[in-house]
Amino acid sequence: MAEKTRDEKVLERRLRELEVKYRGELFSSDAKEKIGAELEIVESELEDSEKEEGKEKKESMKQIKLDMKKLESDIEKAGEEKAAGKEKGKKKKGVEKKIKKEVVKVVKVQKPKIKKSEIKKSEIKELKVKEPKVEKSAEAVGKPSQAEIKKCTENILKIKKEMGKVVMGQEKIVNGLIMGLLCNAHVLVEGVPGIAKTLAIRALASASGCSVKRIQFTVDMLPTDIIGITTYTPEKGFEIIKGPIFANFLIADEINRAPPKTQSALIEGMQEKQVTIGREKFHLPAPFFVMATENPIENAGVYPLPEAQIDRFLFKLIMGYPESEVEKKVMSTNITLKKFEEFGLKAVTTPEEIVKMQEIVKKVYLDENIKNYILSIVRKTREKDFENSEYILYGSSPRASIGLFIASKANALMNKRDYVLPEDVKKVVFDVMRHRLVLSYKATIQKVSPDSIIKEILNSVRVE
Image (tube, rainbow, N blue to C red; front, top):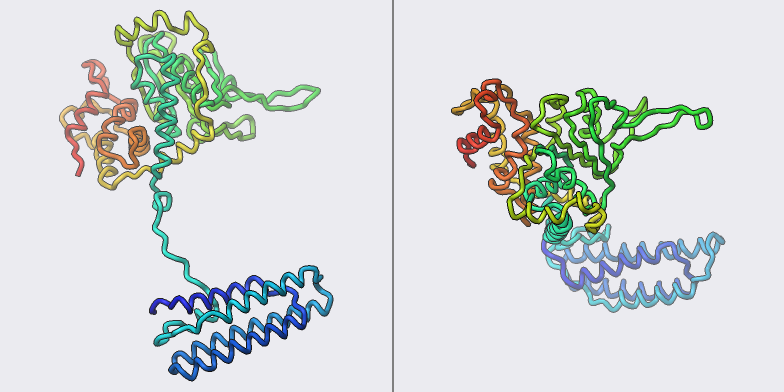
């Protein structure tokens, strides 16, 4: 259908405004008569118009007349309701003046010029104006806007700056912790004692404005020491005492010192973001982030983490010794000589902003080719069709694919991009997959590391 002329649009808009704005309002009898007179003028002009135009135009004009008659009928109905005492007429005079002005505006509108049934009867009858076509914004198509990306990167830089006051020379660990938080996931940090594993998560919690609690795992710990218990006292009866897991940031220090039963108390909270105490379920606060540390050099008095639990950590970060120049600074500025509060870390974000950033990460664009690239990497660990595949006992689970999917998005966002590149996948693949590869006893004897296997897989897989 051809586009309506300007005059046609103006007339229809005026009719619609009158119908919506003044239907059901009160009108006096003299106002109704004046309006009727004005409507007769319009009818007269429409009749003249009918004589001048062809058959198609007559039909359209008749329909407009019907609409005007309908408006007059509505006005009469409103007057009858007023006479019956159903409504009060305090605003009658003001309404009368408004309707007079509006009718005059309608009457002054030029006669529409209609060409060959440009207007459908149903469209005139319903008096509906089509909504203009609006280009889809970044939010409409699911991608984060530039403003959102800018806000996220600013928050990330602020967090890094605050953490840099106490954590020195561990940029890779800091980035890994922030990415784990952006992915709404958990991080396992492995390293020798005394290299600021616990300090890093405390700094991140302080900079993000979130609550933090710490659990020092020991061999005699029970699951209730983590999640909480149901107690009974004669004065209060039964009540729930919540454990330290009810915090935004939970530091599970030396998690491999506790037996598997105690370690497994974290599994429900890490995956479902809830815990069960007695017969009740309790949701954990958002965001909920677990950073567990483990000591790799001791064999006595430690227990290996269950595979079901270790698979729930998005990253396994390997924290090494600092560089010489960095260690020199640490000697004069460290947590042993100063209290943590003396470093003056400030909260630069809020838990609510962290949750928003987690939602923005999900909107980062990831192409089908990148998805296929991720699948090829993960499935290589199961198909075992490369040179040193004999060292793999069990391949990575689907959580590896999910982890690479979301972690590569977080890495792209940290680099101020709203789309994922293959380099983002390569950047996070070691942290995501090294703890998900179960190597054989032969690999342990020959000191073949998961990282060397992953590197070989990357060399054998290409982006299509």
